[in-house]
Length: 419
Image (cartoon, rainbow, N blue to C red; front, top):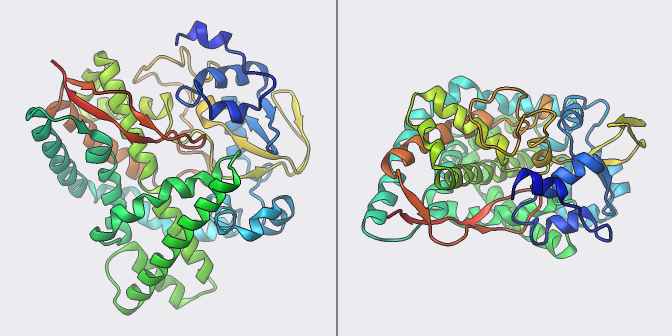
């Protein structure tokens, strides 16, 4: 769809925008709807109880001003979302790092931030390179033998899955089983999540919670050099710094956010390489060139389309000339902000090295994603290797996508060698 076509899209006035984003054709291409929102309803009052914010400047303002748009305290969330009392998935969302406010947020982020320093992430490079070489070589061997290969399951997902698992200390034998729980858990951040989706998220949280509880107990008996052991030690030394509930919620958050979004970013990059072969040159140069390609991938089609944190207006506040009443829930449409022409000239074009506004793919301000550096490292290491070993790929059927508003993730990305 061209930019001109995008500008002509008008959502059905009889249906909520969130419902349309879950239906064809917007479930596969939401950007025309986002363009309509930015132009016609930059603060859109959804019937699901949230105002959807779509312009770059407004999204950035909310992210950088948590005193104006804080996360909800547990008491407020219980009042505004009574269903939360019966659903652990909601409770974890509210009490997680991304949904908390200072000083709690400052304390929790300080406890784990040292594990995601530039030096620590840089120290993982050799392991990431070794893993990427192995996965790419295996996929290349199969493709050259004439097979069709699902790069999502063969490369994109295993790369960040094994990296975050090694960092946390999740045993190899359990990783694939636990990974399938994440999409169900992520559904709870959907502003239009159905009761069935919330129940499925609860079931996934309970299964993962039982597993993590057993792993915490095992690490308490036999500590190792991993993040779970480090957090258990902090809790046991002083549970005023990290309570039982906070320990469990931190591990939920780190595991659920640690690989699915990066896998989606890798898949999106692979689609660009297949559909826009002129961009391949960016992965054949030096590291800054590859970094520019990765940054544009993250901007052009961000993995997380709706920021996971639920925020509320602390007072009557105007965005884009629209007053948001005190107490109104706001949801940040990162996918819409990433294509805002006020921030990016020719926003629908894929242009590495374009400069300009800082992408909001990993958030901003105090809630900027802790794992952003790790995700960038994984993509910057993996993608040039894929391009060198597999320079000419073709899709073998359309990519498989999940029907989810917050995360445009994949179920499959099947390819073959181009003729």
